[in-house]
Length: 75
Image (cartoon, one colour):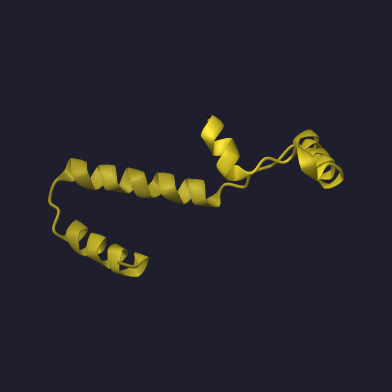
């Protein structure tokens, strides 16, 4: 089922709800989702630099990389 179909089904179900507490809970979830969707994340420069250093290290030393299947076995 695609997301538009799921949303349409949810909307129809919400239309049938008469429980005030349930409506408040749904509204709270929607408010939370809207807030999270609008957040902008700032990645500190120090963390960006660390990632870039690690990329550069793997470019220079590709033998340090592990095969995913082998790494997964050790986890």
